[in-house]
Amino acid sequence: MKSFKAYFPFMFVLFLVFTACSLNQKEKNTNSVAIEDSLAMAENLIQQYIDEGELAGFSALIIKDGEEVMRMTKGYADRENEKPIEKNTIYRIFSMSKPVTAVALMTLYDEGKFDLDDKVSDYIPKYTESKVYTPNENGFTLEAQQNEMTIRNLLTHTSGISYGWNPGYVDSLYRVNNASSWDKKLEDKMLALAEMPLNFQPGTQWMYGLSIDVAGYLVEVISGKPFDEYLQENVFGPLKMDDTGFYVPEEKYDRLSSLYNQGEDKMLAPSQELFADIFKQPAIHFSGGGGLVSTIDDYARFCRMLLNKGELDGARILEPETVEMIMSNQLPETASYENGSMGFGLAGAVDFETGEYSWAGAATTNFWINPTDQLIIITATQIMPSNYKYANEFKSIIDNTLTKE
Image 1 (cartoon, rainbow, N blue to C red):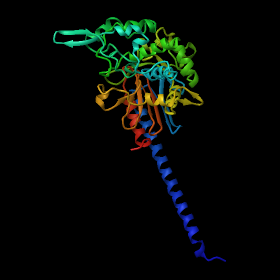
Image 2 (tube, rainbow, N blue to C red):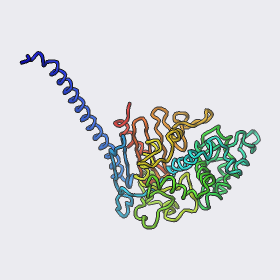
Image 3 (tube, rainbow, N blue to C red):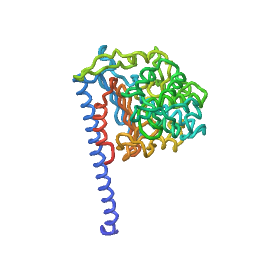
Image 4 (cartoon, one colour):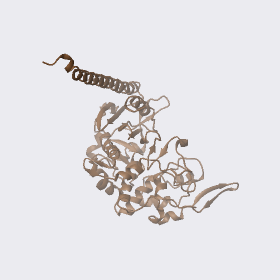
C-alpha cells in the first residue's frame, strides 16, 4: 500500500483546483450581487422620478453578452387613463430613425451601387446647383461648392445642410420655405431642399440637419423603390421588426404611448402638438431623419444586428466591414463633434475610448451599443422637448457595473 506521501502531490493539486473554483464562484457571486444592486438602484431612480411626476413612464432594456439582463417597464404609457407601459408599447423614436436609414443606404453600398465619396449630384443632379452661404464684411455671398457634397458628408452631417432651427440667413430660408415639414412627398421636399443655400463648404464642419432625409431619398433613387417599401423588404422584414414603420396602424393605436410636454417645474402635461397624433395617419413624407415609430424590442433587434456585425438569427443585413464603418469615426480632420470629445460615425455618435455607438430621439428615446463590453442599452419615454437627464442618469449607474474600467 502506498504511503500518504505518495498521494500528497495529487491531493495538493486537487486542493488548488478546489480553492480556485471556490474563489471563482465567490467572485461570480459577488459580481452577481453587485449587478443586482446596480439594477435595483437604476430602477429605484426612475421610480422616484415617476413618483415625483417628472415622468409618466419609462421603459428600458439591457442586453449584455447576448443575454437580457434587465427589462424595465415603469409607470404609464397614458397616465391620464392609467394605461401602463407594456413590453410592446410603441414610441415615436424620431432621430433614432437616422441609424436605420444609414443601414438601409449601406445595404446598397454592399451591393456595389455607390461609394461613400461619390458626389450626391451623381444621383440627384439638382444638388450640383446648391450654393454655399459665405459671410463677408459686406454681408454675404452665395458661392459654388469647392468640393461637391458627398454621400459620406450626408451620413456624417458635414454636408452644410441644417434643420432650420438656428438663427441666421440660411435657416430663415428653411423656415420660410417650410423645409423641415412632412407635408409633401420625400422627392418633392428633397429637391426643394437642394435650392436652399448650404451653411458652409461641404466637409468642413459638423452641423445637425436634414442630411439623413436626403440619404433616405437616395435609397429611393438608387433602389428604384419607395423608401418605406425598401426598409420593409431589406431591414424590418428580415430583422422581424414587426412594429416599426412610418405610422401606427389603427389596430395598434392603443399601444402608442401618449406624448407629454414638460414645464419649467418638470411637471408633465399631455402634448397638444402635431406630433401627438400625426403618427396615426399613413405617412406622406418618409422622413429617414425622424419619421419612425418602434418598440423597445424591435429596436433591440436592430442594435443586436449591429453589435453582431451585420447579422441576426440567420439574416445578414450588412457585411461586417460595413458595420465597422458605420460604428467608427468618419469625420474629416476639419470637422468635429462635441468639441472633438466624441467622434461621429454614419448617422450616430462614437465614443473614442469604448467605440460605443449611440444616438437619441426628440421625444426622449436613447440607445447605446458598446462593442467593447458587448452591451446594449435602450431607454424610452415620451417627452418633448427632449430631456435626456433620466436616460443618462440611468445609464451611468448601469455603466459603473457592466462596463470595464
